[in-house]
Length: 237
Ligand SMILES: [Cu+2]
Image 1 (cartoon, helix red, strand yellow):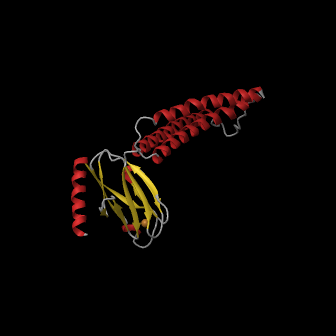
Image 2: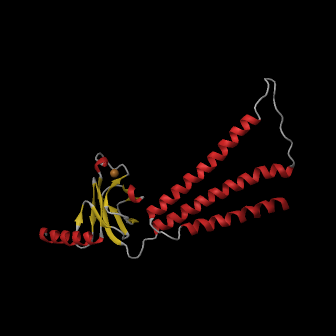
Image 3: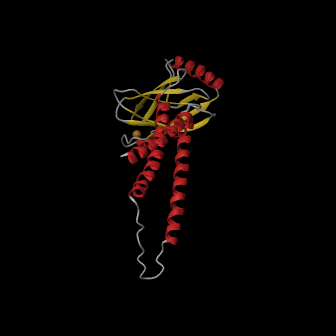
């Protein structure tokens, strides 16, 4: 039993620094897209390192333990109980630690997705078959999304008909949009430019047309756009 206790406490001890590292890595920049990319790069690095280690080990063993003659059947090494246990638990512990490290990072990322900054600009989104409507709260209603660079933007979303899903690939955010419920996503454009927002939940025959522009503009241009859009909305009403 003492042997298992030692292995278990060693395993738990090994996990703590990983959990701490995962938390540390997420304290700095709280932007969902940056965090998403960082996690993606970590996973790529992780599976590359593991893949190379296993590939090299497999090739090395294929050469070292190859049949040297047609009748060569080889022999199994005799392991003691402690060696057998070590071969079971140490690789398990290493992989479990790595999995937990990645899930801790995923968990941190999810927290960033769900914690909307207090100074976020709020825009209401309504989905219809088959277009999106963006309501800025001061009479401005558009079918394209215009946002300022450098400011967090939160979208409060609901549907007037069926299930849709709002996705902005550039900002790495996606969330279902449902009738009778308000869901949300937030993002923070880092540079000016136009990207796409699209529906990713099949919602009827024209689902494929249900995309629109997301236009990120410098803050001053955004203010000017807003004044103009408001004046136009007032003229129409
Ligand atoms: Cu759709």
